[in-house]
Length: 456
Image (tube, rainbow, N blue to C red; front, side, top):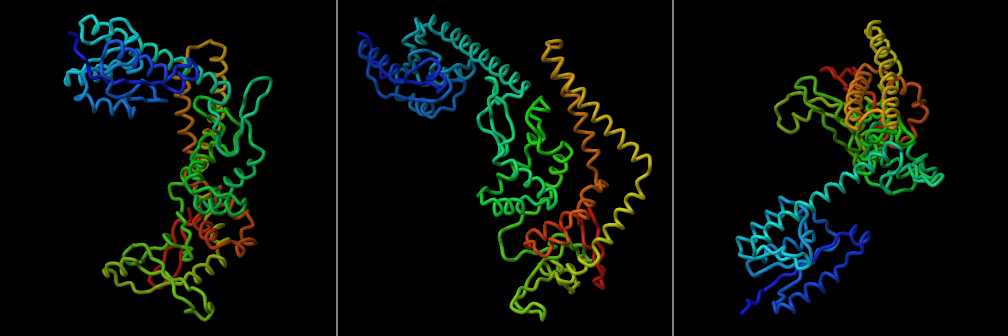
């Protein structure tokens, strides 16, 4: 008499298969139920993974089924590709089945039954063919993706702020979104001046009445797409910033001021160091403790090491008002002296070297455009194109980083020509702090509390 098996039915379909081929969960369930009824087997349970690919084992119901193997005599599915299309993982599952003395049976494929030697042979053969077909599909998708990138066509319907998709002559393309273009420009301009992601976040949200979080603005500033480049196409979309500006932004983000929404904003926190032990000065405040600030908070800075560990004997403190007044009275003269000093130290050789770098950058950009044109005309292979493009791209990044050295005076010159003094009094304290941090590297005090400014 034929043994009655305790059977688990496995059913799977991906979203793409449902849409493209009309594969149905219900049709698979019906097939398995009919097979169990016809063969007089006991159907213990269905394990249904809807919307999951067979390329890996990260499927919740597949994992539940594998956990139930000790309870089952066999796992039944319609076709082998419902269970797996990966040779390694299919054989890994097969070993788990064997350890639990559980069989695999594909009821709609002839002889795919691991209870027989012929079934085992067909099992391995069909899984290999299924993986081959999956790999071919992946290659086709990758080729289409690369073609769209080269042609500047969208590869996804989701675009970052500042861009949208339009259709011209039946072809989709990416352009600047006129409804948010001004916001994105303002965002990059604000960050280039104040160099604080948090301050930029608060400024844009308040000015335009939107509610995006810190991480959203951080992602925007990190995205190279805003230079116009994506993957292998340097002109994939219209640019908001140059490559040089992008590289500068990445440097500034490493030291971006994490401004918190708090009443206690210290203008010079992190900039002042103790003249005795070298530790950073910490800020503190008092309420209405100064004749010029009745009923207002009065901010001072003192050695944090003395406060925390008591191991520094420098007991003096300095008021925020004193530092701010010193800067407002002297900053323009100090900046001009700094610029003159740096320019005097830059030899003609260095200037000539930078001119050479700029010339080579221009040449590389032209070579990249020519290389892309040659590839489109099928005059070189994809492999050769990728190899040459990667080499030129590496050289371009290296040269751009040389141009954004610490002796680049563009940001500090921009500070002087930005009419900052006219708008300073109207700035919120959070933006005042970002302004000072954008140009000052360190505020040096001597033991008599005289101030010296070191610029970035």
